[in-house]
Length: 467
Ligand code: XIL
View 1 (cartoon, rainbow, N blue to C red):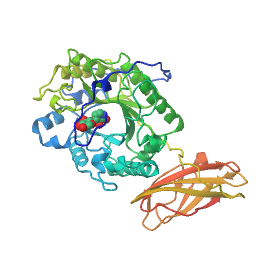
View 2: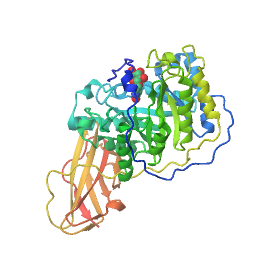
View 3: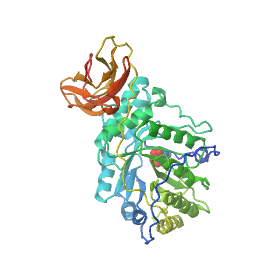
View 4: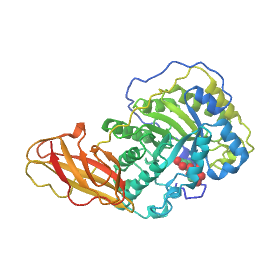
């Protein structure tokens, strides 16, 4: 179901329906489980979650920040915010190359003034794309996507706790495959390139993949699981997985086990858009979701998708913790009691350093000339104001041990991020030196590095020297 800008379109029931469980091979990895903390009863969701080393957040609409009842509950109860629509592509880049941060900035300011974390949502999503992007494809779209990631993540650099770098890229149904979309049609590597690009722009933000109908062990969540496992194995920078958890009147019995199998891959897990259709068991389900998160040491927080029922995108389902008048519902009490109960795990406090992304550039179309020494070729994706460059370095007839590629940048161009090489500068003529793992290139072999920047990308053939 597509969500159009500025429209509230609740998902159909079928989208909320849970998929049949599929066999999944959980990898046994030692979980870091800290000692149980003593229950000391907090009186708000945020304070109680904080006592457990976690956050409790809400999706917020900027235009409601003038509603005193809404803001009163927000500031009293929550210590994290996700912008409901304000950081989506249609909102932040309504015209190509023209960025609008008004709503997102308002939310970030509010969060900073009240000591709340911000979950950035979302850099790339097939839904709520601006019209101009919907009309692009192939390399023009790929460049626009990565420029969008770079620009938005750079604008919010240092202010975002976790970014949903990519949202909802997997298909529903029994295949565990990617969803078809114009983003996907730019090439299957779009997700990893987006994560690398986001890391280069804001190395301090946790980078998450976020999806729905992945709340239990099923074919779709296993598809995501396999991608995360592959990313971790290849050093693609991913730190967390978000489980939207738009639930009906039930929840998967393996909800906690599913969170745990992802956590065991070495990523944080977060419940990112929780809302549960009102029925006789709404409070129980809310309590059980909360308990599941607390039982998984790397489940770092829960976000509900709105504050009062009247704020929900699921009109008529009353899926939230406060009623239309702002009163606490039984579901609220169930969550608070679960947060205040003892016997839970504490998330580790250390953050893993960002990994150095391996190269992802395509091979050059023309083979380099033979001979000793090394050669380098550029492939540049440009757009108005920015570019991404991949550099293919090839050894001649002798092995290479250490190399430097010298690239002359046009006047005014500034390098903002480099991967798989060490840049000796950011403008003018820049020497890019190998890093440890790619210093050695076998005779006739090759390696890749890349960089991105503002301004006009380089052209021509760079020089490559060995040693
Ligand atoms: C929803 C918003 O709540 C609505 O206001 C908007 O009209 C459509 O999008 N998955 C997501 C969220 O990742 O961004 C969606 O938010 C709900 C489904």
